[in-house]
Amino acid sequence: MQATTPVSRIMTRKPETVKPSDTMEDARRIFEKHGFHHIPVVDNGKLVGLVSYTDYLQLIRSVFDNDQETRVNEKVLHATLVQDVMTKSLLCLSNDDSAETALRIFKTNQFHSLPVVDDKNHLVGIVTTYDLMRVLESVFVEQRDTVENQV
Image (cartoon, rainbow, N blue to C red; front, side, top):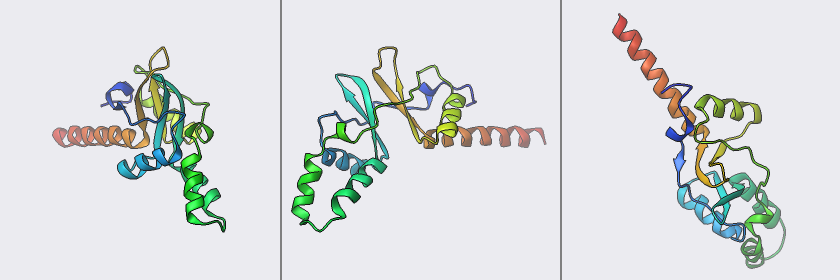
């Protein structure tokens, strides 16, 4: 792979998603079951936001850092909607954007994931810093193999 590799070759297709009307309990289940750190929020197929594990942790701290009973806190978590916590203003990639473009956006903005959308803002995938690490690893292996073959 190269820096010019399109993100469509490295992205996770059909990522787990939540709806704006889902609760943060629904998001918690996905975070815990899959170990994801970012979940796209989709409404009628269109990307409308992103909820991160950090968003979830901030909510937990604000809810659970009080003296109320655990049952009351759990009810608050079940009553908090994803739309009330999600990030709505997003930078997105298209299928044709390069891995290098994704890398530059990650570096400039200190993001850890970027949704990939089509021209109608339908979610088609997600690229994470982990995906880019895999690209870099393959580049390093290719370079090493080239050097070893020249010797």
